[in-house]
Image (cartoon, rainbow, N blue to C red):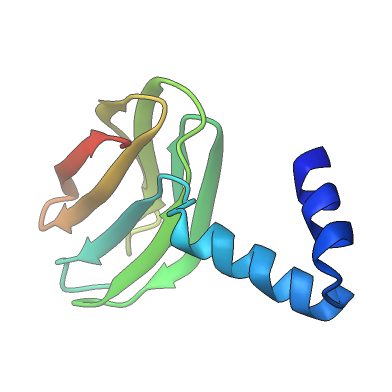
Length: 130
């Protein structure tokens, strides 16, 4: 950062121009964080409600997923642990199903499919972050 300040002072460029150059430098350097794109697909004939996914370092949820519909969410995995899903079926029965273990820093996709009979299929396509 000190080097950056010295370069700005010596080049005589304006503050907005320097900010733009710094932003461009960040973009070109490829700075990015590892994310997991999660899709929850409801293959039941009825909606599921109170859907919550618990992953290492956090959770997310949605009130209802209609029959045949999907819900998408992107998250950053902050530690190593097992992912799970909680949901309530049309008969108001609550279900909790554990899934695969996620490793800190992984990226890719995770598909969670709620199938007939309240079974859950997990399809992870994850790699270690680059």
